Image (cartoon, rainbow, N blue to C red; front, side, top):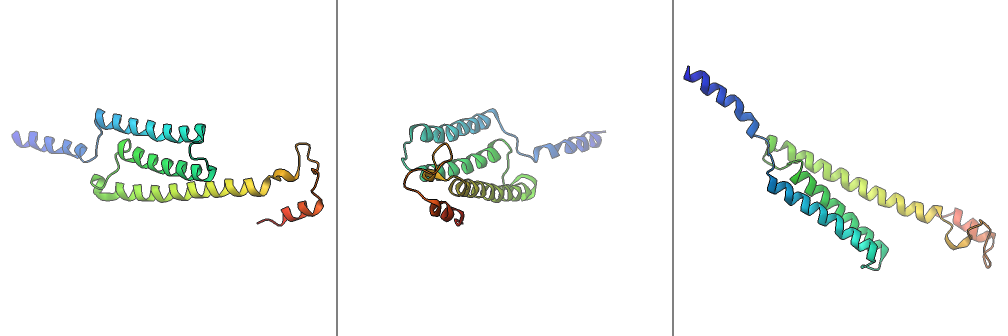
Length: 143
């Protein structure tokens, strides 16, 4: 009868393989998430860095770090869980995050440069003083 009890005890051991967070680890993750959100918000609202491009790069870096914090503290991804496959999923996620962040930044940059006529046209759509039609023709040749 004791063998049946022991076999049942070993059956429940598979739940211990996955990493489960404690209240303290969730609070650390939450605190880091708040900090990693508040700092970029402060940088944008105060213009502390002065250069919009540098601010954008810093925000993208904070976003990437925040994704890693979420994967570690909330999704419990590490090298010990599931024989390392969880870590491989994290690596794939990091690659996809880099592709998405870089691609989104690239698209927004080029849409801003190629779609906006900037100073060549005023708000009514008419050409402003000092610009001729050759300026508009050159704008269509932009990459």
